[in-house]
Image (cartoon, rainbow, N blue to C red):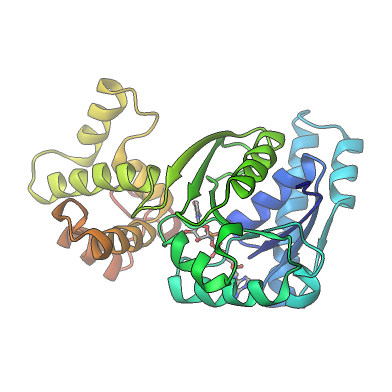
Length: 284
Ligand SMILES: NC(=O)c1ccc[n+]([C@@H]2O[C@H](COP(=O)([O-])OP(=O)(O)OC[C@H]3O[C@@H](n4cnc5c(N)ncnc54)[C@H](O)[C@@H]3O)[C@@H](O)[C@H]2O)c1
């Protein structure tokens, strides 16, 4: 099937980035969120990103203006999804919320609409079942910042049809992404491996094996990680990583994903990483 009109649900960090990436590739995009101020904020972030591209000489003014013409906001859910060929959900990481959204999508979208979730760790299968059209549901796990990060982790469930998968892969290719297709399972590939290493690094800090900076240096220079696991945890947010760890642990009961007490107590005391000014490192 051919994809022309896209609706992105959730105009936050990921949603506005997905919108920028898609309009730059020539798709029409409607950005939807729970209220107009959230939509306006997402549209403003998208415009700022495109403006920055012009300032840095990465895009021309004409390309930016063309992209912006393809982007609009819509606060009414039914109007936002009523013409969509593809909906990409980028709402907060709560399975119940996502289930509700997919149930609403199943009822409000045209019959042909493909439904994708940008979840980092929730069960895509659960969302597929909630939608009532599970063969048209797929995971599209983008990375932040979306227009720059090359990877799109594509999550297929036992229900996902091959035409849904092919359509998403074609969409990804037009966005300039490299795809990896992963079977729906707790943490997929990226979160499962990323969290396992991060939790082990935190356990090492907890056990006084080494200072955070030494642990990160080991992985950066010894294994050529672009960023050590603790520095990355600070960047992503300790609360976000704890949420993902808990979700994978709940699903697998594997001790690998049991969050260390240190992580839990840092989150409880507001040490969330860069965004709070303090995590495994201090930030101004
Ligand atoms: N931030 C990251 O680095 C990252 C990376 C990959 C995947 N993800 C995933 O992407 C999703 C979104 O994350 P984010 O960081 O953009 O979150 P965010 O908090 O920045 O944005 C979420 C947006 O969704 C909106 N929202 C809430 N309920 C909604 C609803 N019912 N319908 C539509 N919009 C609604 C919120 O108002 C908010 O603007 C999550 O599932 C997250 O796990 C995040």
